[in-house]
Amino acid sequence: MTTTSYHRVTKRDDIAEGGMAAHVVAGWPVLIARNGGKLQAVIDRCTHAASPLSTGRVRRGAVMCPLHGARFELATGRCLGGGYAPLMTFDVREDSEGWVEVAVPDAAPGQEHLPVRPR
Ligand code: FES
Image (cartoon, rainbow, N blue to C red):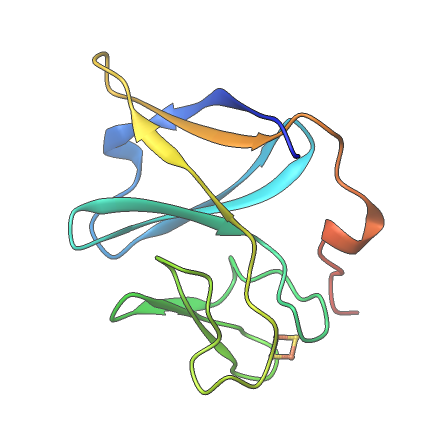
């Protein structure tokens, strides 16, 4: 079983509705987005060819990969259209002081979790 821990990442007001932000949380590449008022967090690495997703766009609850256009539902990580494996998702919460906290595995990410920047 994978154990996870919450980490304080950013202030709630730093992520506007429809916006997203990339963070490295205990070594994990995390994309945090606000959709319908709700914060959601997924891995910042496309399951197709490992592009970072944080340079893409968020529309209607999904992030679009900037490299080949795959779309992933932020709430579930599911690839819309089903072409690729789902994204890893992370639990996210806001504390009473306005901080956003994300739960990532306690184990360090492997190379298979890290995005590859297009040259
Ligand atoms: S790398 Fe994301 S769709 Fe190809």
